[in-house]
Image 1 (cartoon, helix red, strand yellow):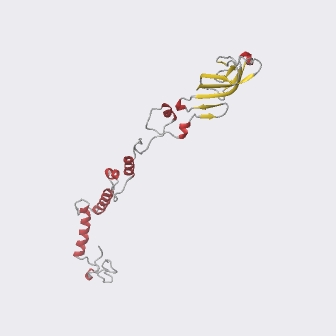
Image 2: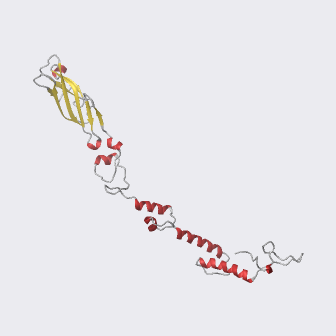
Length: 245
């Protein structure tokens, strides 16, 4: 589409239409029927292409038609949900919603045989040990675990394993110590809740070693008295082990 430059009788000036000038006697430009019809037909084609009917009295039809065609073009270029989820088209555009739907279709709950996503379990879920859909981080897996290795030491199991504590003492035993209760052997780590059982033995020659379970002078969660009748004035090396939580 252009001005009717190839029609000399149109009277264009510098390639454009001009009005008649009665002062100078310059005639105005003429609009050839072929050019006028072409312009009108081109506008009508745009209006009809939008699906509308031409209306001679409506001067907004061209603008509305252009807006309609642009919207339709945009709509036609957008991927549907099926197209987004299939991921096969290289010509369609994706809205944020379609991107989300496409990702959601591909990303699934992880299982032992399927790669996917999974929620990180909180400590309560780990301790419960019921769900098989969550994952555990090393930090939470180790939560509550402690160890001290040495002549006296302990192993504290993590909370999700019940928080069981095993301790051992390289201590001593005697007869006369602590009003004949024997030597006090203090646990490296006080049992916070309870001591289930404990066993004591001696090193060297002796007829036996006694462990005092109930002693008002010390809580068994803190330590135990170990008594050896054969050592009224001295002590003998002893070993103590206890289990609690």
